Length: 193
Image 1: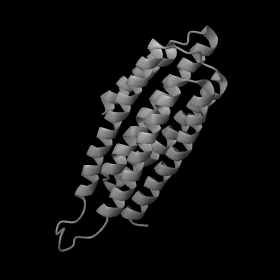
Image 2: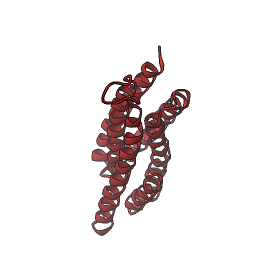
Image 3: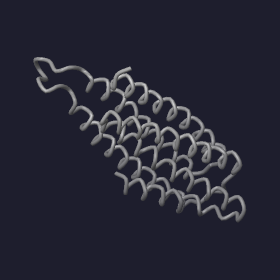
Image 4: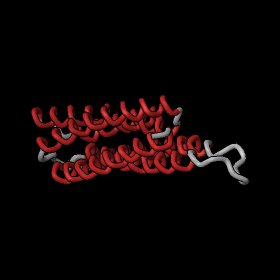
């Protein structure tokens, strides 16, 4: 299998894992009422969009040079990296907005067990998928896959952070930690953007 086949297959892995994690996070967010988990679902939705962009960019960049593109289609991956950075920025702004609303109008968090489980599953899945993406990105010199790997690496830390906050809320009952952690997640996302 050539570089383009490996890159495409790896991009599909990212799309599939992000799709599953979004579903799990939305369910956990609804059941728990946690803005930080919903924020993670938004972040994962941005990552899914980024993964889809990466998938199409690696397919397009693999096309040989033609009359309209005498130097090939490789620049598509660079453009996709910029778009992915802008998506990360948009996700952070949405998360901060939702967290501020929760600080102003606090609510209790329920179903922390499912929230904890989903966050730690998410961290584990993203850890392994991001390692695979980085490996293939380095082997094939793919900017798009490297940007996608960076998104997922960020998700590992944010999912762990949200999981820890859910644990703290479960044991202390201090629900204000939820929007505070959501803002911290957003600030980490902004740093990545």
